[in-house]
Amino acid sequence: METLSNILYWLSSGLFVPVMLGTVIMFFYSLYMSGVFYGSYKEYVIYKKEYRDLIRKADFRSLLRKFNDKSQKTVELNYFIKQIFENHKSRAAMEGILNDFEMAADKNLGKYKMMAKLGPILGLMGTLIPMGPALAGLGQGDVSSMSWNMQVAFATTVIGLFSGTIGFMLLQPRQRILVRYLADMEVLVGHITERNPKDSDHEHILASLLNEKID
Image (tube, rainbow, N blue to C red; front, side):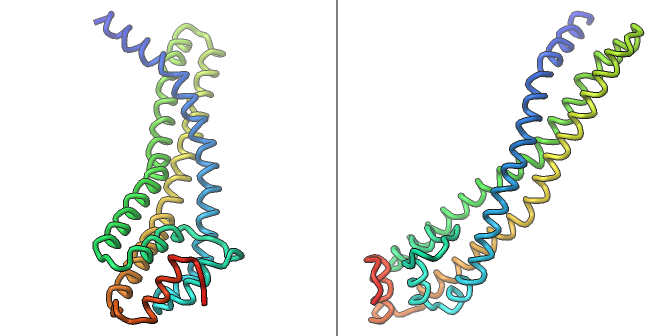
């Protein structure tokens, strides 16, 4: 039994440095993802102001002009909307593009979910691992060793919870933005499907997109 206890102790002690390193990495990663979210939110504001109404009204010509205007700021949906236009003759192809967006959105949300879960986990591990040496130091009367280990334990907890909090706070609004994108693309596919494929004006606009020309 003593041998098993020693093995578990050495294993947990061996994880101390990786856990500390992982906690520090998660802290800086949460700051990085905050910047990424800020950039994506700015793009969403531009999209909501300049693109969304055009999609809802099925104003393909104005939407086309924005795509081809180099001075216009790009938004996250540019690639997927262009793919929808390029495959406008096939309902199955457009549905496939929507599925591709869903998978890309799920992958993106996974980063925020990882922060929300992994941060507190690393913080808890970083709290429990130094507690053993701290209690051992207390039993031996080594107050300085105990205080150092307790300081590390509490600091790791705070950093881990901070990373998890950032991940949780960013996850909800990011999820709502992606759901809105998906809903608007489904509306766009519906508009394209409802239009008569033989409508010459409709075909002209979509063909212009493929050729990147505006009459």
